[in-house]
Length: 433
Image (cartoon, rainbow, N blue to C red; front, side):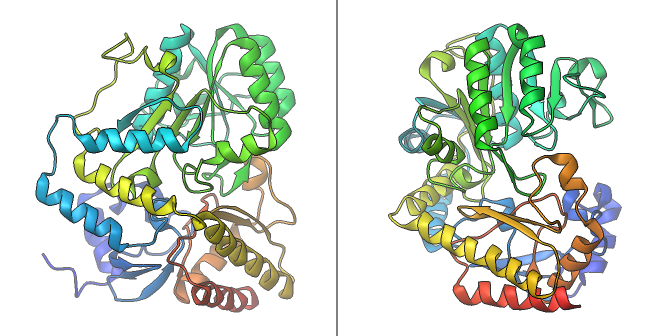
């Protein structure tokens, strides 16, 4: 049935009859900011159009994958060619090898990868692998970091220092998360206390090196350095969740940013998604051959997926990685992103509005606060009401930002200087409103 003549509101009403909340991923429902979700009909370059044919400058980029913008010619050509060859085989293809080789070449320390279909699947499998390789059960995660919706990771912080967490979702029994320890991001004291108490039982620590699910909060260098030291000292594996940051903040991922400042730094296991699929359902986890030998069919850690290494998805991902690996790509993307956040901050200052900003590569965040938050509770203490007003003011002016204050934003190679200037001009009006 055609939706060309239906408004966003009509589509939302229709969707709610057959889809819980009217959406297939909760943040899309606009519950955090209020109002009616925009139903997108098409996208090109840096823009999206909704059902009412209103155009938006897109700073979500499908939550990160569209680093080249929508409809990049090289990506479209690769996907269209792959589609004619077959949608799915359930058997190995050479393209899977090529994508794995590309990831291994671009990320030092990774010797082998396993392709899967989603970030949730990759993170879940990485934890299972860490547990299988170490023979231990416990894991640490950090409040505000999101690693997908696997049961063991849907956890909020406990009531005190170094206590185990509690389920944040109905349907997750407490015993499922009994081995998950939740700590405050960037808190070295808590980290040391947790290792002192549980170090011998810890299989792994999973972290977003730059958290994109409490807006944009980066792990401080001293915190990351100490985390690496403690993991090494106690035999726990350090798992980097780079589903969002991988090939988005730098060609070598966020781990390359930390390696540049911490000599010899590398995580033990890395999890990737989003950009490596170029907009198609594809993710991966990888590490050394020694650890990967524990994975089936070689070892006892089981993982499988019918659509893993899908031929269309791998074609899309390979074409994307080929483009972003070209000389100068990330320098240009980082400069474009920095010009956006600097412009937003200048516009806020002119209106006497407190705004803290940060960016790395093509990923950015901003907070209505005097300084950048360092952990989840500080993020939640920022001015939510002001963010919601700003979000709608920008949406009205044709700028599509993440519909929640706790989500990072993304710039693509398709965003031009004029697009950035138009966004900053809209922000000036929004701050003044």
